[in-house]
Amino acid sequence: MFDIGFWELLLIGVVALLVVGPERLPRLARTAGFWFGRAQRFISNVKNDIDREMRAEELKSILNKNSGGPQEFKEIIEETSSAFREAKQAGHIVNSTSPDPKPQPEAESPQTQAKKPEPAKSAGESDHGG
Image (cartoon, rainbow, N blue to C red; front, side, top):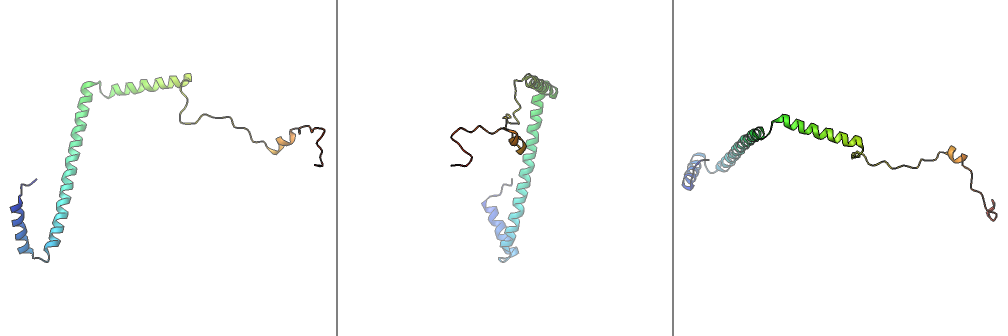
C-alpha cells in the first residue's frame, strides 16, 4: 500500500505525541487502528469482488468458445431427463425418494376377531382349567 519505513513511523509517532499529548495518544492510536483496519477490509472486499467478476467473465468466455453456449447445456439436460423418464417408465428405476413399500399386516378389528372361529380344543383340555 504505502511505502512507509520504520523511521517514518517513528517520526509520525513523535509528532503525534507532541501534538496530542500522552493522555490522549492511546485513544487516538486505537481509533486510528480501527479505521485503518476497516479501510483494509473494505479494500480487500473490493479486490475479491473484482477478482470474482473477472473469473466469472473468463469462465463465460471459455464456455462460449468451447461449446455451443447455454443452448447446448439445455439440450444435454433435456436428453438426460427424457432418458431418465423412459427408464423410470420401463421399470428400470425405482423411486429413490420413498422407501420400498412392505406389506403391513392389517390390524384386526374387534368385529373381524369375533367372526374368526376358535381353534378346536383337544380332548385333554377343559374349560375349567383343572
